[in-house]
Amino acid sequence: MTDSVKDHLRGALSLMLKPLVRLLIAQGVTHAEFTETAKEVYVETVLRHFEDAGRINKSRIAILTGLTRKEVKNVIDKTLDSTIPEKTFSRPERVLTGWFSDPAYTGPYGIPLELPYESEEPGDPSFSILVRQYSGDMPPRQMLKELLISGSVIEVDGKYKAVRRRYKFSELSPEFIKRLGEVGYRVFSTAAKNIDKQMEGSGYFDRMVFADEGCTDEVIAMFDEYIKHRGQEFLEEIDVWFSSRQENKKSGEDYKETGIYMVHYVESAEERLTLKDILRSRGIEKD
Image 1 (cartoon, rainbow, N blue to C red):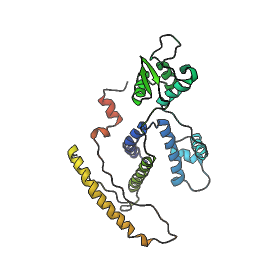
Image 2: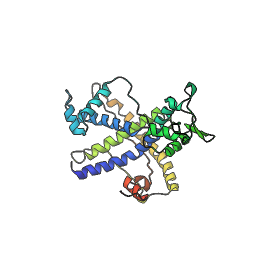
Image 3: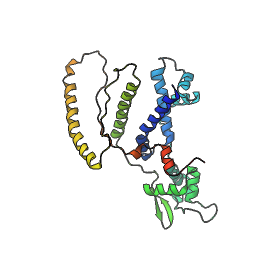
Image 4: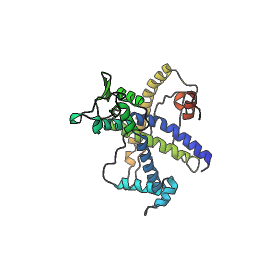
């Protein structure tokens, strides 16, 4: 694969990940957890598409994925381990865990101490020391802001009190999360197949229509109502088409899931800015 193709693929990956990573951060999924999942998918994909059935060649998996042989072994061992995987805590969760469990920051009966932001006497516990101990290089002031916003910590008479052991993230329905995975898989699998197809015309239907110069919020709202009505009619028509062909089923034949997915998207130019664009817009240059 040429460098230019890799560069374009990485650019496409970055674009696809933007909304997903935003959701992951909002739900407390850390970079470490994302990385472990990515490793699992890399190993699974090699075994599924680039390796013959039978004995697993860890060295070849390492070569194709860029992982070390040790990492490949760890992925396989963790996958085969029936125990619950160890949770990777986010920085706010690590701070709260220390606050509730470390004797240096708890009083009688294990109740978390009310901490000043900075200690008046050397060696006395403080919020700043707690953050440095349990969150590394995270600025204490920024951590305090996040914990106050989440409601995990409140201010009482100039000190800070931990009122909830867990850093609160907005709850999502398991059904919605499952649907996210299914929709993303189906959209990306079709797009990837069509890009990687060997000859013209061998891919599945993949078309798009959009406003050439964008729309105002008013027109977007009008289009939303329009597509909800017309789109629903079209999907119901397809549902009838599928139902009318139930009689074509034959026992013993291989069946695959198939269907069509429609989505109304709305995006602003700012959402497509790259990390370099954002850094430059804020006046940050390389040291």
